Image (cartoon, rainbow, N blue to C red; front, side, top):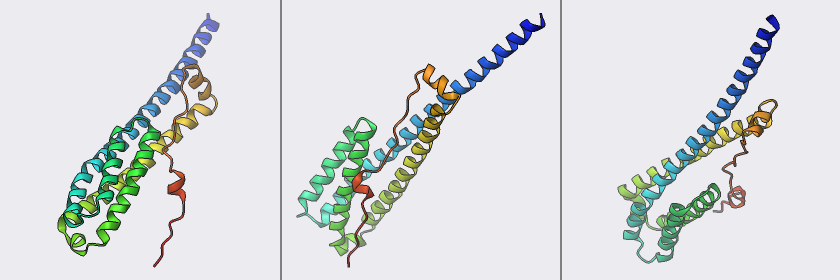
Length: 183
């Protein structure tokens, strides 16, 4: 009789342990989805700011047509991007296009002094900071999840229930290059 209770107790403890690990993995996977959603929210905010910024710059620099077209094209790519890799590539394309747009703005002192332009630029910089934070938050959650599915004993449960590794939101080769500043 006592042996039966001990066996039932051991089985119950093992079952509770497995359920705990499983729930932990589910929680981490949900956090990854939340973090990715946070990146999407900030990218959407960035996308929404760009038409206003382009229109403001257009008023001052009418002959910079290719810059405006590149920004518009990059914005469209980001809107259409589906997966994580597509979003990262489109985001990098938009970042490069925006650098060109701000370079154009440097050539127009009246534009740089415009309150509307300064406000839009500040909002865009704030959004860029939030995107960077969202990426860090996402990557921290991916790290925790990927670690949990690789370490013993949770790796057995992860494998049993089909949990697979998630992808980090990584910088491209272009973003890793050193920035050259010349005067």
